[in-house]
Image (cartoon, rainbow, N blue to C red; front, side, top):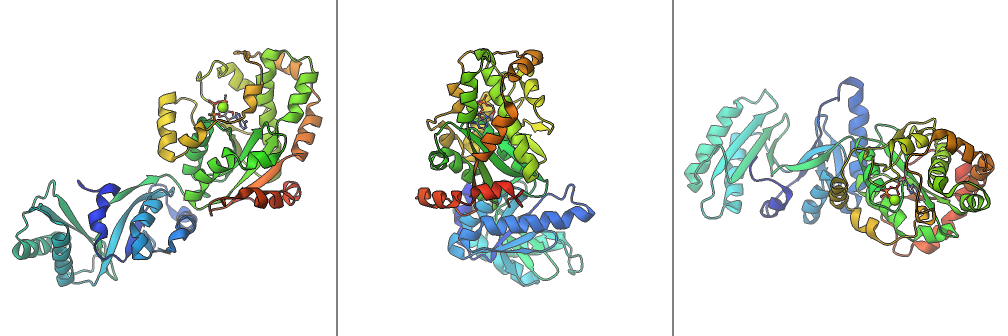
Length: 432
Ligand code: ATP
Ligand code: MG
């Protein structure tokens, strides 16, 4: 389709529509996969489109969304951002008759055409009981259109493409295809825990795992004296930016760094190993949270060679501290690609905001190729189990819901925090 993308929607939106259709890729949707997939997509779309008061119907091979006409364009663009969506398009419902298609073609062309733009009619007969073939309908609608409007036809690269789809109970007149973000609906691929810093890479890594259908919860290590300060800073906003458009909620575990920091200060760990040890500590704490809350993997924004300390040796030293797989979707990306991606998914500006990052409190010249033996030796100087237990007891959890955070988050957060320790203890039923 030559003229489509969402910026070209504007003139189309002036026409009367009944809603929009959402299509997903059929690949991998055999047998038992289909129902969980479509049910989840329907649920996520319903949540993500709640601000538009949308009603989402599952029609076996597609979803149909009805929203009030004044928010149609916005709702359609929001739907295109939901993982699992291949494309969406405006729909006008017509009776199953040739005359209805001819009439709608004429109206639509006349409403859209300026300066004799060319046109093509394309028809797909999904329901084969319709008494004419797709080609016959195309010709009859096209001929009538030319006769009544004087439009000239260009089948290869029309300025205006009129698409009809004939179903068993109605005919769809479709607006331009708006490509979706693809992937799988969040929730069909299990649960993972992402290590989220305030930086640029880790939100992109989490987004990529969400696009493969993972429910992602987040753990962030902060250098504030208490979690209230971390709660009003950018990290919860990053989580919100990632999950709200997907119609899911997520947990954010806020973990203080100070307990580990104090232990480091009192130890004789060589400063060059402090960073690797802290990274391993983060992984261990994440691992414990994963056991308690049923996450199947840990996700990081690690990249090979982006900074001097991101070497294979150091990455291996992290894997050595975890029995769970550590996924690093950005391992082989160039920084420029990651930056462009962060801009595209809307996390870039937040990530750039200045932040009190705990890694910056650690020695300036970290070991670039930490030897496992040396790491193990250094770690023995720390009361690891005790530090993990103490740190876990200080974790604060914030659930980020599909509704955006309120402007004044402080009071609500303080109230929520009272219930947080019990939440940590009970294994949690998870987000979503
Ligand atoms: P990012 O932009 O994600 O911070 P980075 O290039 O700055 O990445 P590092 O700071 O070396 O890389 O961190 C590597 C990874 O370790 C991060 O992508 C993140 O997954 C994790 N990480 C780093 N700092 C923290 C933190 N304070 N809390 C949780 N995870 C962290
Ligand atoms: Mg960082």
